[in-house]
Image (cartoon, rainbow, N blue to C red; front, side, top):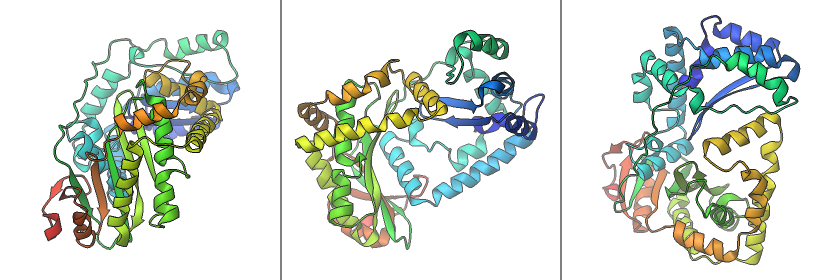
Length: 398
């Protein structure tokens, strides 16, 4: 919410002036909130860097958060949430995170917020958050382009030298939800031609000692087009246009997710195939061909992270925000290539727990619940699109 308001106006500029001045200088501004950090960025040509940085610093450090702007952004955000609540994929992702992490963990809520949280945010909350967290001791500045430190530092000093220092609040370590007997969570989407299946558990952090074996293992399982999950549900059975698995690895362990949209009539069969492939992967058996292809696939993704100056800055910003070593990308290829079949097998055995994974299905519950119940994967419960418990609507969902 706060990031959306930064370029809505400062003490000397309104939103229109900010947009016009950036455009006149050929600059592009952006802001985003991520799992470990909030980020503002600007892309400009070298010749206009100083005037662009003057506007950029004004936007980042001196936002006014005018009441009218807060209300306009609130309405926009509520519209975005309404769209997300109508999108089965977004609903599946959010409800699974809530089941895995619990309602008291920040990852148990969607990044865009909930209807209740967005309605409750006040201007006072926004001002206090910006004052507490936008601190130089809590920030890093990344510059990529045709410049050097000798030319750049005086400009940065002029534009950011007056930024008031101070320690930000201490980040709390959040507790995951306590493990309980698995339930299968259904979110009713009457008449949907596809069901969204989302399966997951707490994953790994990006600095975990076995992160590279885990990444190779997951590439084999579901990250690439030629993965086991996609080969099964798309190529062999034609239940889906595409399924995937992914580790959302951050400074702290994010979720592991295996998911995809499947033909509604084949929801139960698709869920059974998901669980079969997860169990097979946990056995740790991989071929030499799978290992080589997975490692090559991971290595090929790295050049795209540095295709432009803004992407390069973003890549190193992620390294900083996740607490990774500065040479992370320099050593990435060697660390991937060093992964052995034994390391992949160990990662699969220790990191995958199909028998305990949370299961969320978004689809027409009255139609799909009886056949899912027959799989005996756990008691069936119903939740709404925001993850709140609902009264069961069918005998199979009692």
